Length: 246
Length: 230
Image 1 (tube, rainbow over the protein chains, first blue to last red):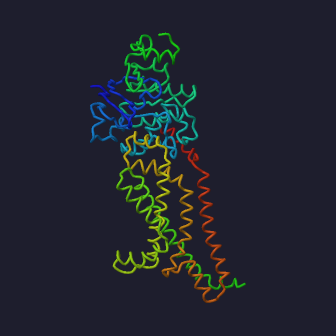
Image 2 (image 1 turned 45 degrees about the vertical axis):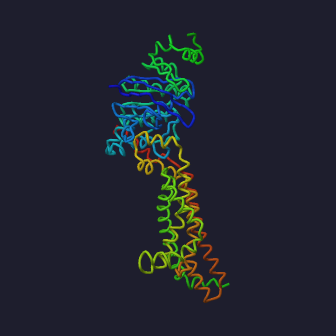
Image 3 (image 1 turned 60 degrees about the vertical axis):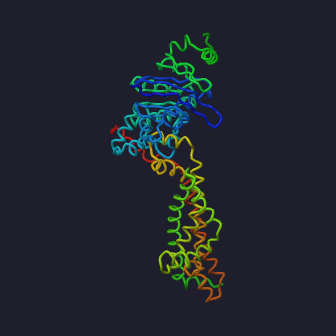
């Protein structure tokens, strides 16, 4: 069974179609990079997967459970799907450690002591142990994003979604965050990453999904995608972002 | 001048002040709690709930407080309790009903100001509506609302003096009683005014202090222990 199965989803706001007939599958342990020009629907696609956006039509399954069913327990599904945002969205009134502990304690009902151990172990993993007691405003963007990743991981998700996690960061901080994500990929996490980092897509992903004008235009392995894309739209996009001759 | 009036009647004035402070404290706590509830309801996405809370807020804000005090004491409380309530109880209920409408609007503004990303992050972690409100949204909103709330509560402290209209002997009324006997209004009124000022000014200074110290790294000492733990 696929980890994520998306069946013919449509999403529109009033007269604007954001997603048109998108179907896709993601297997356990797969790293999928979602790329495409701004406004192509890639972020919306990601947000539909954990129900932050409701699809207008179509169905989405996560590990066999239907996200789009009317009576679905979204809170339960969301606790199993981590998401990391472009704008980080750490809770500004809580310390780094409290940010990470909140959901395990409140949603999973893990005792505080254990949650604290989990938080500390994760902070060590993302290289932020020394900052456990700081507040988000005292950290750099890259540090905040690594904490946000740790916060999601604390729920032991089956899947991690990344919505342009490095778009608000300078190159050095971008590398910090990408390194953390690479490490996560090596650990076997199923990941969908909406990104403009072509080198990350090429090196780390094992599948590329290319969106353009609300449609999923191309879905292929990175090698094929970057060297021998099928569609003319893809070729044009790659030419413009990579200055590649393909 | 007859400043001696103050010292001669000091105990009586202070007993009035105690009533005022008790009334203000209870009304602040009550209106804060009720105001948060009404504000959250007003903010609700369910139209009926939002409309009903909105109607309460608009209705309450459009009526003078003094009418509330009189109406609650002579109409509402006897109807609910089946017997007359004390002046203090009626005044307290009236102040809570009245101020909670203003607090609710402040709360709604605070809730609207919350970054949508924070709410989405909380949803994405699987937190339910109640936990999102209690642990994420309200704490951030309340911090932002502090200046507006403090100014509302300063109004409330002064509004307690209107309870004298139904006969409650609070601070202002206790002063009145004295100068109705001595005819030396000025000294007593100055004393009363300065006392209100002292209370309200210390409250607003306190709130400024709270504002200027947002989130300080308080417990860096614990850090070492926690590192060992991890």
